[in-house]
Image (cartoon, rainbow, N blue to C red; front, side):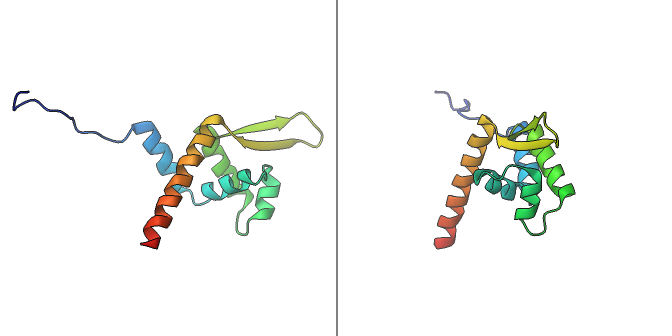
Length: 112
């Protein structure tokens, strides 16, 4: 190997996923929504009633961002009265697993 050869090049965060994580983690309600979905609370009205301080407007904005990034998906049922439910996508389940690992890492740091 020559002395001038570089083994590694400068690496930056993947643009799309970094922006997604910044947007989602910057929303103080996204992690709460994930917790609700894990406990099968998947209807917006039920979500608002389950969390003190969560408003319909803020929830709808949070759900929209998470839907745009493909973390959750919206299911509208053709019923009267109308019914909407949210679920994790396959990607969303993987994403939440990563967040769970970050939480475990933080707990390990807190224990030290």
